[in-house]
Image 1 (cartoon, one colour):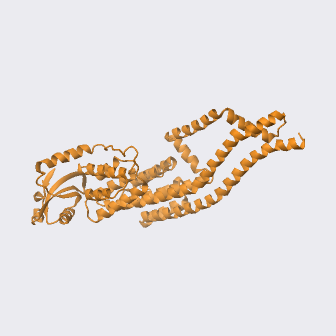
Image 2 (image 1 turned 120 degrees about the vertical axis):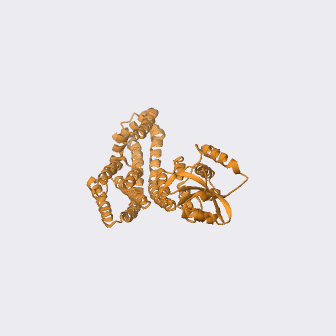
Image 3 (image 1 turned 120 degrees about the horizontal axis):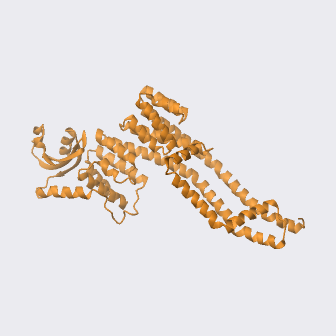
Amino acid sequence: MNESVAGSPKPEKFKEPGRLFDCHVRLRDLPDQAKTLTLEAPTKEAAIQKLLAQNYMVIDVREHDKKKGAFQDIFSTASASSAKGPVRSFFSFSGRVTTREAIFFAVQLSTLLKAGIPLLRSLEIIEKGIANPFFRQVLGELRKKISGGGTFSNALRSYPKVFPWIWVNLVEVGEATGKLPDCLEEIAHYQESAARIQQKVITAFFYPGVLTVAVIAALTFLLLFIIPKFSAIFEAQNMTLPLLTRIVIGASDILRLHFFWVAGLVVAAVIAYFYTRKIPSIKMSYDKAALGAPLFGAILMQVAVIRFTRSLGTLLRAGVQILQALEIAGRLVDNLFIEAGIKRVAQQVQSGQGLGVQLEARKIFPVFMTQLIAVGEESGQLDRFLGLLSDYYEDQVDTFLTRLTTLLEPILLVFMGGVIGTIVVSMFLPIFQLTTGTS
């Protein structure tokens, strides 16, 4: 829709001489309705300031080109139709956007929008400076969708693998409240903290994981290739073998003679686990059992607390209503058992109950956390206390993981040495009997 601002309620503001600009805008209270205004102003910056003063959300401002004339609407329509679906390119099938790239994008876009640069121009500037070809293509398609009249949040919704759904929710809030730059900052802070805690967990369990794989590989090699050679020697000597040796040779025979069955059972068990996790009731049982696991259950609970408090605080600061924020934060915890408890808490909050009191009544989270949330509610500083809680538990997780890694390394090394040593001893016991002549 092409309108002239001269027809607006305050035409006198646009009477000053200057250049004509085609302004693609949306009203802040009607973010889904985009329109194009023709505005006269001495400079592009002046045009943007006038639009902002009239409560418009500026998408793009370009100098009016008379040569385009009647063809402008045709090109706009073509752009809108091409934005209906993502354009495939050479990089589409293998493209990936890292968390670090997404965070940097949010920070850059927030900075440019705060500087008064329109959304489309900001995306264009960022696109030119991105090295990742796939991400550059995604940003180009975002610009096409927005220039065709779509909202930024709807454009992001088309790329769930690039922009998590929390992006869509916060950007939607930012568009509705006129605080898009602030919401983008909150997105960057949230993803930064989420990536940091995830990296800590991965780093802590990387070395123990490598040792575990090494133990399994060593055991498999010994049982498949080394033990059978000793077994053939003992059988040729017609020896009476010790119990430990018979157990080890029996395990070797089972693995060697029925290797494909054993491997198939292991693969089937893994596939069954991941398949059953798609069933909500079974996944909830898995998640509940994981929280009760010795040693690892504690760290899973602390990570859940960090995710919940960090996301809930981020959403509340961005202006999301408490019930919607609880729903989103519950999903971000990534534990169905805890999510179900948070949903029940949200129902009580909707009826007027306090959040901290209900969380404590459900006994989902630690008492320390629920007490501080209750204090935050009473003081009217819930988002601040949520931030303090997430920082506190992040420090706790960091300390816990450091200690756990320090303990796991020697434990796994002792276990690995003990298992391999047991196998070696079981093979040498008959040899000692043979050389000493005992039976």
